[in-house]
Image (tube, rainbow, N blue to C red):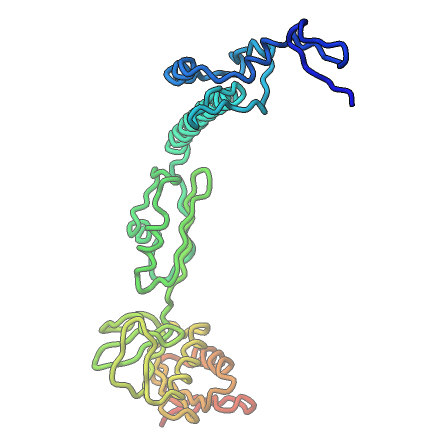
Amino acid sequence: MKEIRFSFDDDDRTENNEDIDMSEYKEYIRDLFSEPDDEADEGDEEQPEEEFGPDTIPEDPDTDGEFDEDEEDGDSGGEETKRRPRRADTEGERKISRAARRRLAVRIAGGAAAAAAIGAVFLASPVFAVRNIEINDTRYFTSDEICSKIGLYTGDNGVFFNKGRAEKILESDKYISEADVSFRFPDTMVITIDENRIYGYINYLGDYLYIDREGRVIDVKGETEESLPVIEGLKFNSFTIGEVMRVENEDSFEAALIISNAMSKYEVEGKKVSVNVADCDNLYAYIDNIKVLLGDTSRMEEKIKTMAEAVAEIPEGDMGTLDLQDLSKPIIFKYST
């Protein structure tokens, strides 16, 4: 068998064997397999690791400026003996990237703050001063009363006016069920109010309970204020403001709500009106000195409309009975003797 021997010296070559002359690489191979110099290692450990940026990467003299990522570290007591330039390069790039991001974030934050400050100054300018106030028609409040409640006046800044607080103030009033306050650019404040309308009164121990269309007690006063029916014939012992009445004769209470809702559409102006609902099959009303027979609750809105039209034709001061129990029959007014 032919042998191949590696010879470092020319004198070691033999004639019988094919040798490869390695004399030119003798120093390189010796350095490769030699033990690392302890003093050099200690010097490397004492010197702090330099940070390199993308333009300051050092050149490796053994590799002509190219770095081997797979180069293995020497083993000297488990401590790294060779520094990898590519790792330093990556860490340097990361530090530069983090610094760049921080600078960008600072610029963005500064720009946003400046834009916000400019916007605040612009919105606070007299350009957005309130010059017009629009309020829907209300029964119980004037426009001045509403504005006074929420502290709104012409000249106020419409953008920064506390609209949510104004809505809460308005809705805290027992005569207001819902309120909406908004600013319409550039100078108009719009206020929309849904009132708790009064549909009738209930006599209670000399006072009057003001009820809405659902029978909820809105207020208690010693007198009536509108030409709305005073309801009689209900049986109850107590009430709570803001809550629906609780009565013993619920059918009569339902009849009272039907009549009062119908009379809100066909008011009898300037007349004193009362309705008795004790017997749901024989309902009747008094308008001044005229008794109006209504029967049951069937076709009640037609009956109330007819009543309002007929009473307007009867001379003031006349006394008698108007029978509206059956609208299919002729309407007759009988004078009292």
